Structures are given as C-alpha cells and as structure tokens.
Image 1 (cartoon, rainbow, N blue to C red):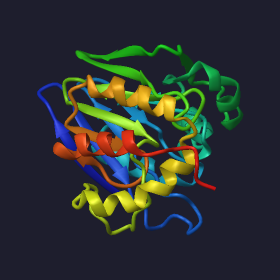
Image 2 (image 1 turned 90 degrees about the horizontal axis):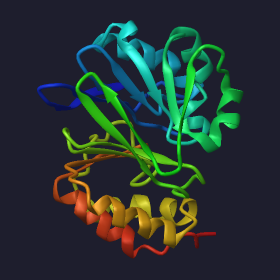
Image 3 (image 1 turned 30 degrees about the vertical axis):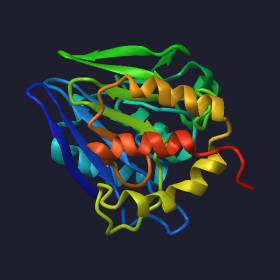
Length: 243
C-alpha cells in the first residue's frame, strides 16, 4: 500500500494511503486520508475489512497508535467502513463521526467500544488541537446521508465518491491529464449520482470554499486549477441516467 504526505502546515499534516497491490482482484481500491495534529489524528473512510491489516501497518509508520483518536465515515458503504469492527477492538476510546442517518446500518459492522458521534444534516465542525475541520453536506452524492471533510487551513476537501475513478496500482496519486481522466469518471458519476439538483447544490456550496486539493475516495487527487476544471465538468454532467 502506498502512503504519501500530501500537505504539511505548521500545525498539521495530511497523509494519503491507497493502491494496495495485495488486495483481492474483485475488491474496489479505495483511498484513505489521515489528518495528523500535535496530539491527535483523524482517519477518514478507513476502508474495508480486507484493508485493516495493511492500513494498521502503514499508520504506525507515521504515528503511535494511541494518537489515532478520531474516525470519519462519509456514508455507510462497506468499502469504506466494514473494517469498523476491527478498529473498534483496536481503538476502544476513539470516536466515529458519521451521518446520523446511517448509525443503525454502520453498527452492523461491529461497534461496541467506539463512540458514535452523529453529524446532523446541516453539517458540523470538529476541532483537533488547534485545527478545525468542517463536515460539508454532500447528500445523495451518492448516499442519502453523506458528508465531505473540508480543512480550510490546508485547503483540502476530502470529497468521498465525488471525483472518483478507478486506477491501476502503479498510477500516480495526482491527476496529470484532466481531459483523459474524465473518461474514467463519466460513467461512475452518471450511474452512482442520482440527482442533478443535489449535484448542483453541492457544486454551488463547494465553489465558495478555498480548495487547492480535492481528494476523492477512489482514483487520483485533483490539485490547483484542476479543482475548478472538475467542478465545471461535474456541473455540466447529466447524472442519474446511466443504465
């Protein structure tokens, strides 16, 4: 599994994990992101149960395990949160932030120790040491209750399934050719994003944010002018129509 520092500020870091060449062929590859402050860390969409061992092995290369105090699940899908039962045994004092709508579903993955912190539909904020992140509503993209994580200091939006694409294990983590990359995104977004109204509401909200890195759950990361290119492309895309 690759791990790479994306951004480092005076107060915190963002670290990327993904592209596990050892995963079973039929398992969808996912990106995991971890925000690390002086005393705490937040692991976002920690992955499926099959990723737990490589994720754990890579995380402890960067931080002591007791520093991992917070988890985030953007929605209920198993590719991002079915490892919860194992994290529950490993991090008994951690907190999981996730949409209130999915608590009853997420608990099926195993949750006896970790504290569930419900995110209301309008979103909320989380402060880790001096660093504040915002949970940005992304409902119906593609889950009915869905959130992204925005870090205004690092200018990063962890965008869940928005911007997702499937990539080879040896691909770079950053988009290099935007036009070529759209061919890898189009069908996924048309099939999995059911509502043009919800999509356009999200685009309008996100355009107000200062974003240097847009970090999806699958595929490559957009940076710089590619963020605006993606928003323009996504806004024009007619979704909910691929069959």
